[in-house]
Amino acid sequence: MTRFPWWGSVILAIIGYLGLKYGTPQLLDPENHLSNLLPQFAPVFAMGFLLLAAKQLYDDDPNENVDHDEQESGKSQDDQKRD
Image (cartoon, rainbow, N blue to C red):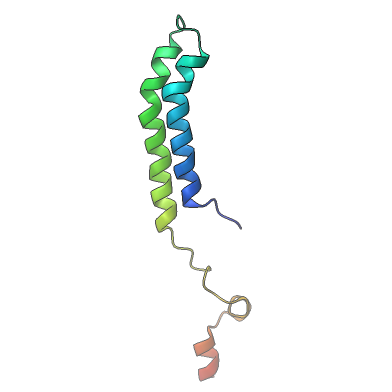
């Protein structure tokens, strides 16, 4: 299964922060109460994606470095050489 790369979360955090902080006041009517509220949530939004990026960066996939033959037999190459 293909995983979403950690740097993708960083890009989403940057886009989300800039969009909420500077984009919503431009797009929404100034009299709308959301135009003042959404920019305040921009750091929280970005922090969520940055924490996700940190988790993805240090995730360890145990099957990532395993050869296809090892997955089928359940033995590593060193174990097969000993047998």
